[in-house]
Amino acid sequence: MTLKMLSPLVVMAMTGCTVGSGPTYQVRQLSSGKSLRVLGVGQMNFPDSGPALVLQYQSDVDFDNKAGLRKEADEIWADFKADVEKSNVGSAVLSANAPPKGTIVQQGQGFNFVFMKQSDGTWKCTTDK
Image 1 (spheres, rainbow, N blue to C red):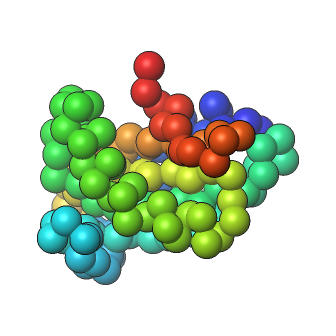
Image 2 (cartoon, rainbow, N blue to C red):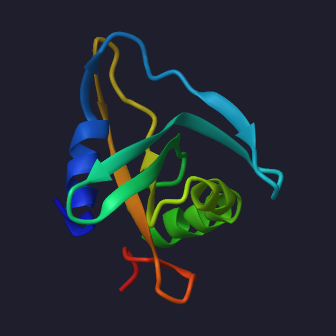
């Protein structure tokens, strides 16, 4: 599985339907001063491209506003990048998740930003066109 296939798969795995109460999260303070609701952080391994560090977070940005989501991701990336580099992985995913809707059956929405380390050591968001 390659990272190009990651975005739809992570969205399907991290969104969709759940039963019961909403997701639990931890509030973290970004260096910018913004509060971030972290749903989880973990490593995913891909046979073709190796491990990636994934940060799932809850966003209040309208998911039709891709520029707003990207601006928020850049703010998060400024802090998360250090964790990614300490993890010694070649890629990372910032997974924005909308607050779930519904009472008994909850539905959510998500969008992923995939960052890949380049040969010169810089990071590039592959979600950008």
